[in-house]
Image (cartoon, one colour):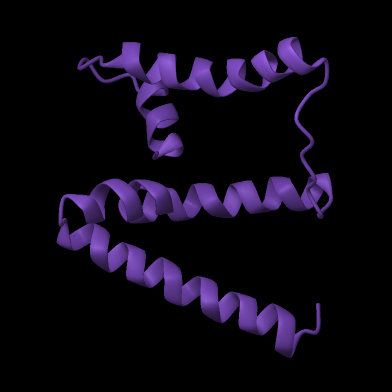
Length: 112
């Protein structure tokens, strides 16, 4: 979906405004769980196995990565690869390799 790019584009101060569809997607992301609440009487259960400070650190790291790679994993991996963008194919390959190495290091080298 490229949610990070959608949000960045909405917050952009550039003269080219395509904020209508961006705002609609973000409002949908907010109203979806609220619709579940209205229908079922309870919010969707979301379990996050890390602390809030770790979520903030992770968000900061993701923000840096999105900035340097000119997009997020889903933006490159779904949209970019679908249109055969060389940049997106390379970015997605780098994301996958880095993810694999990170999981290996965390699970097998650091024992977490």
